[in-house]
Image 1 (cartoon, rainbow, N blue to C red):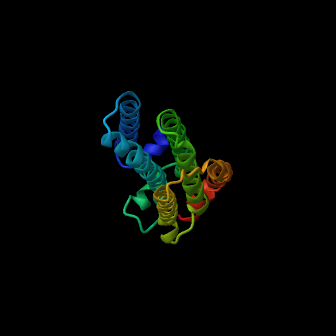
Image 2 (image 1 turned 90 degrees about the vertical axis):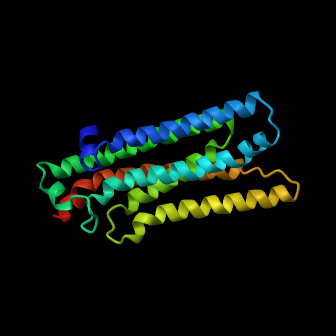
Length: 214
């Protein structure tokens, strides 16, 4: 499946993706260790106030974009070797394998990121909700030709993050402690269902969608 995935992405793209996600994980762990083991006053407040939000913004967006690269290979208006890819023997099977591997890779990213965040910052539910919902939505809309649906998951995730940050800041300014655990627990469960259903839909319809575009 890795071989199939590489067919539909840029050369060495898989290694680049691993490096980017690994760097973000290491940074998250490093800042988390600093925050837990040392007291640097304002710098600690910066870490706890900014870094989790930064990660919650970056990783869902990168995961969605990484998976979208595979789906874009089946779009005639994308300059990524559309005709060549469709001329490859068993290209439909390769495309389906790439969809499967892309989702597996994204799920590994979700689980590893959530584990690190849970250990050091406690924002794992937010991360899981955003990533699973964004990826699930992308899987459901992956074969729609309208380009708007390719960027819509990013727009939705960005809007949710902005709303969450805004509400948290308003509550903090009022001197209260914002606890969204219950909300995000339910949201994460719903997002997981959307992701599972979306992935099943994308995998089952991959060959049909690929052959339809020939």
